[in-house]
Image 1 (cartoon, one colour):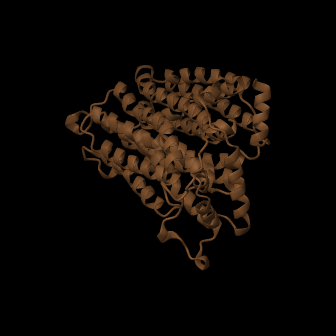
Image 2: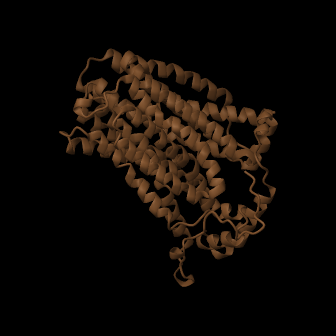
Image 3: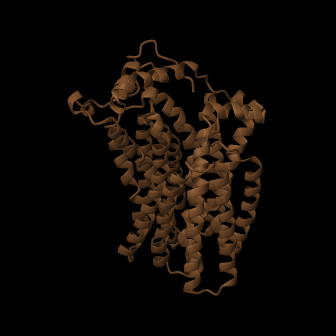
Length: 484
């Protein structure tokens, strides 16, 4: 979005570049590469909170379905879907609102506001006395989740040096799945430690307030984005931040590049969506988001214990086994980050979707054809883990990378926001419908997933572009020529 440069940069400053107590002396300055990593580590606590909040519901739901007399909320399959999907519905609004706030108040301050949303939303869900209260607080929590999904990558990208940007931005996704792993581990530990308590699920949800508090405190010691400062006309302060995160010989060159980029940048307009090639790109981006979510990934991330309970495992065993989902997701993401730089985007995501279809077919066969034994339960768990490996290492990582590559510079934020909202909408649809389908159809649910993913595969084969090996400027010219 185009930012007007203030005539008096010293007036009406929304955020200072660096808290005074963190400004190092010239002789004691933290090495730039290390300072950048510290900033990335602290900012990705927002992604960790994002991951925990989306993962913790998997362990909390079995206890929330208990009657009120036993400490639960008497959830039915329908209200399970409502509670789970309410967070994602909030995330749709959060993704849009956070972008506007970040342009006005800065990336760092917006993340601090989101940390407060995370904190109070987490406490609200933990203290919820009724279904209505729970849904309202989950929507508030979703605002934080959606905002973090938008702002954390932007903040990292604007802080990171160009040659490290891809690696550092990818740590955001790694922290998301790490947060989910921590949620699964905490769920199992709390369920074991407080087995006799009526409020096990409340302890699980309350822990989400901890990373939110750490994020808010950590951001007090972080600098503002130099690009945001420059866009507001605070060039002196932008240079001050760059001197902390870049080697001295690179400061002036990068500041000049930022100034030149701002001078050439055009403001995004809704009327740009009438441009045929831009409209087609956004539709492809929206389709890719549906491909990711209709793969069923979050049916496993949100409802893994419910699936394992359906397979015959006990509650404690199901919660413990769910930890493996988080471990595989983390390992797969690490492998995917390394793999994505060697192969094209198109063959990776297509191969991943073929693997996903095979997993759904095998899951359906396991549920429908095998007798209910412990062996069947662990076979289903194994297939879930293989499924997650395909999703996290091939499909999810390509999707988020494509969202940063596909769209033209002048409306990258607007176009990405629209495409990502389709992803959140598809996420909410799966979260709402899956417990209802699982309760009514059982293993047949995975036949439906296999059919839907077959159509997704046909979509990829026809519309999925290849972006590897091209600069963003080359891609913009290529899409304008081929999609017009």
